[in-house]
Length: 160
Ligand code: ZN
Image (cartoon, rainbow, N blue to C red; front, top):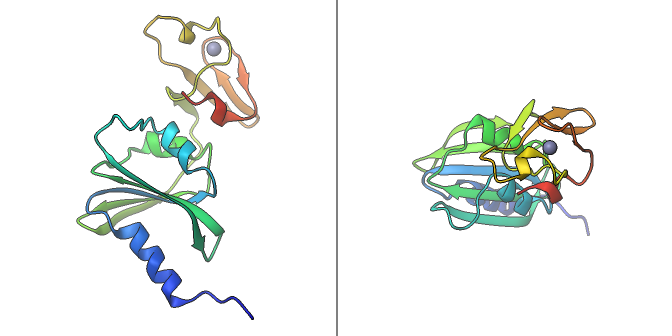
């Protein structure tokens, strides 16, 4: 038997994306990366936003995908772009009063501040100094602004 995209699938997908009143829906996240997306955004569970995560959602274009919904918070461009490091095909829907107010893709940022820890234990950003980590985004990885240490693989294990 042939598996076809059914209209119900689309209806469910619509519901998943739209059902919050105000906030942000991050859609088309690479399967299995939803929790890393939440981490890189600095959402820890102690914040006041209501968060819901859907994993392995059937998607026509991608096979399967993850979705993160964040109520009562609209992500800034800087925050949105961090997601590109993990899931460059993610799309961001800003929801106001149950409607998609704005839809945007993510762009690889040139600089990322906070969220990622420098792998060099002696780096000034890892001391008690009030210095936020800062990385320059290069084609082959992230370079620490302070000590030039590189993160070239497994970025998600360096997310704070
Ligand atoms: Zn460093």
